[in-house]
Structure formats: structure tokens, C-alpha cells
Image (tube, rainbow, N blue to C red):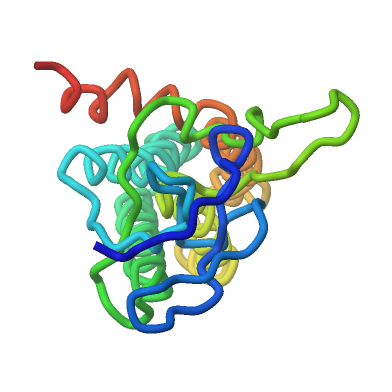
Length: 226
């Protein structure tokens, strides 16, 4: 076990001390504050790097959030094409390709970069998703900002995925739809794309506000049942 110096405990649930240096078995710590990205506090309020891997329930949550834009794409493609266009199937395949490539790229750019494996911090409780609500105010005037991603990378990786989905859609779909969706009018053929410009912000807000609730009271909550 690495010996540690006894120091005043950090305030708040998520404030911690970063490890400045390691000299043999002795660690030197910085001031209490926010943990760097990819780290979270341990039981001693020390910022430790996330070295775990998402369990199957975490993957179920990520899979659910990844499927939402694809299902919405398919819904609006059917809604606006219907029986008027023979290109609906092609648009479905294109949407599937966009989301699949976005998911693959998201995994590749996540730490460790270039690998389909991602490292993560273990989700311990619901408040881990909303660390911004637990910044301490020792004197009720000054706030110590310790907001960080305690559930790394389950929170931000969804935003990255949505961003890649949107970029790929804007790069690929308009040109392909313009050439192949000849059965629709000039305005109708792009309505499924316009719809995506509305539902992606909604999905982003859903993840930002309700991501923790979705995880805690859906697939992720199964692992907490005895």
C-alpha cells in the first residue's frame, strides 16, 4: 500500500487532490479541486485514473442511446417518403451506415485512442452523473468548483457520437438523397434531414439532463438489484 500524508479532507463529494509526483512509495498531492478528465476521486479524496472497462449494463445504456438517432432517422424517412419514393430503403441503409461509422469513430477517438476498447470509471450512485450540483460552498459565498465527469466516459461519449452522426449526415445524405430520391418533390426529399436537425438537439438535452436517470432506472439499475 502506498503511504499517504495526512492532510485535511477535501470538502464536497467530488473534490479531490491530484497526484503531483510519486517518489518511490510516497505520493505528493496538490490542493483540493477538480479532478482531471479521465479521473475521479477514491475513498481518500485522491484523484485516480479510471482504469476499468464498461460492464455489460453500461454497454446496454450506450447501445440504447446510440440506437435512438437511428430509430428516429428511420421513422422520419418512412414518415416523409411513404409510398411515394422507392429510395426509402436506400435512405434506411444510409442512415444505418452513418450511425455505424459514427459509433466506430467515436470508439476510436476515445481513450485509448485508436482502440475499440475504452476505459471507464465505475458508476457508484446517481449523483455521479450530476457532479455540477455538488460543488461545495464552505463559507456560503465562495463556491469550490469540482465538477468533473465521475462516470467517464458514459456522459460525454454520447455527445461525441451525436456530433459525428450529425456531421456524417450533413456530408453524405443531402447529395445521395438529391440524386436518388427522384420520386419526391424538391422540398419533400430533404424533410427527413430537416427533422434530424430538430431531434439531435432534443437528444442532446435528453442526455445532458436525463442521462443519469435513464441509466439508473433502466438497464444500468439492473446490476444494483440483489
